[in-house]
Image 1 (cartoon, rainbow, N blue to C red):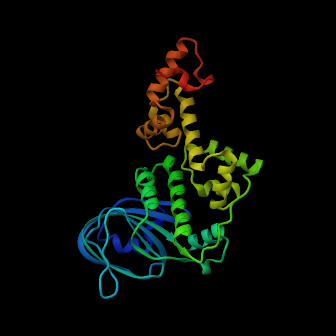
Image 2: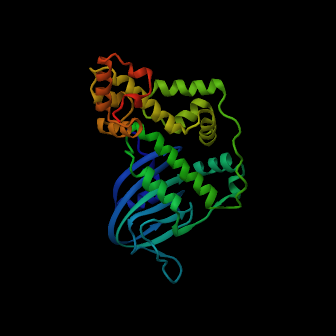
Image 3: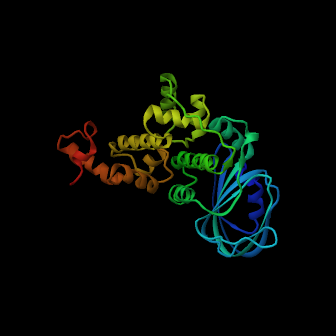
Length: 315
């Protein structure tokens, strides 16, 4: 069995013996995240980590101090952000309960992003250290997008990787010094590349599909692929893939013999409940209700597949 990447990181290995893992996952391009829960009175030292760390306090943390100089730095609490660059050691006094979200970014992945996004030498770009910072954009992304996801569900893996790259791009844009202008991407995917990506998605809906996978199929970097994909198709890759999963689920629901759990697995959802939640958000009714609508209107001679669903929904 392959060891999860997050287990290789310095900060993870410092915390693992004194904190509980609520959730953990690899987000693509070696970026990983762990959600921690801790209730202790202890000292922690992150000694010369070989990776960058973005930390968000989800709950608690008001008693945590950063031991820095003669006067410890206070100010922790829900919504506070810490940016801990690689190779900078830090000491922390933990006092009481805290729940944390950590994003771990290896230096190699960071350097690739600097070249691809900022189009400059990574040696010229320095990540700025922050302690107990307020950043609504980070908090919103983590709380509203990442935390609610099922980190082990294939259907959510693409959203996770998109969110991870979103946070990485946010750090590049807001927490670096000597930052040059970001070069925009002009134009979309070529016709051949677009077809190759679309065919790959259609053939692999039952599997986890990440941005890394799609960028590799396109022969582009993740960052360039994401922008060019949106330019070509008018939506983010994860939105497109989810829409295709739901479309396939709708088609399969026209066969009354298939169990909802079978349809969920065939479309890349982790469970029937996961399918029901995603389907309801997009279609407006549950899969079971949708199937009943199809059967009812088929009995009346209506072809639900030939018209927008809203025509057949109760008003």
